[in-house]
Length: 170
Image (cartoon, rainbow, N blue to C red; front, side):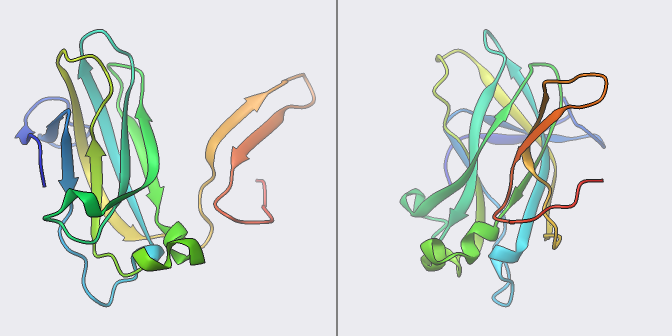
């Protein structure tokens, strides 16, 4: 849609190439088929930062109803790539689009990644690799998993769920 992106032979997580993306760029994936429900999908990818003066870069993943109009972009999840020099794996679920609050976007056919950045104006490049859209599993992975208050016999585990009300911990 806009901005600057190019195939690059640097910083690939796997294979030989990654997609180098500059600040102010929105990537739009190819149109999904009419019979595909976007709310049943997940997007998996890896990112790598090459920047001067910052250890993390923020971007968002969402949907577009019109790929030629950036104002139709609706962000669904904010992501942060950190630390500099490390590949980060990301999974974004689109199940939010199956809720009444987002029913007007349930028929969107374009997944987009927006790296607008609020970092200072020096060079910050975000590299994307292994971008994969697939059917989401029935049991979604938790987000923001954290362990605290560890002792020899216990630990406090917290996470952000995807709307589930019960969990099985293995």
